[in-house]
Length: 208
Image (cartoon, rainbow, N blue to C red):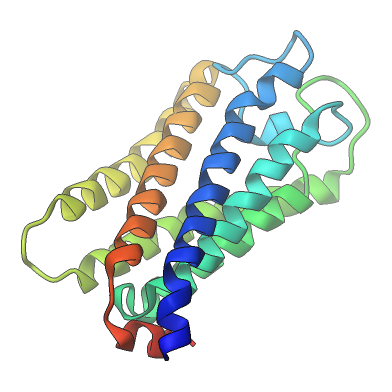
């Protein structure tokens, strides 16, 4: 148990580093894209699309995000509860799957339609798992007001509103999706910092 407590700050730091590097990769990925790529119109997934030169950077960002969330789910322990951990672990796995199975390219080019379908399923799972996970964690926080509860609400509203905006205003789909990514990065980053100061040993017992 003492060893587990001692490794908490190191694990938290690893999560934060993965989140920061992931966000940097996702933000910088458009730099490697062809001139026809637009951060306003085209999604993060399209910057990791099949057959696109430079797509490795966005894929790296997605992979790091997935591994960061999987690690954080284990670290959070009892604070997230069983359902919260399960949902966010599903999010991590789905994000990794969305990197492994790439989106179709936005330009006319050969692509694997089955792989694109798997990517779409993974992306749907990402959105669903995030909503369920945030709700589950919000329930675990109880009824006492805290800044964390406010941001839970922001994340939930964004998770519902942003997909609707993307569906109805495709010309700005890429921009609004990046807002959703930013909200998710901040939410997970805040949870990582909370895990750094949570010293309840039962968290560690429950997270095994």
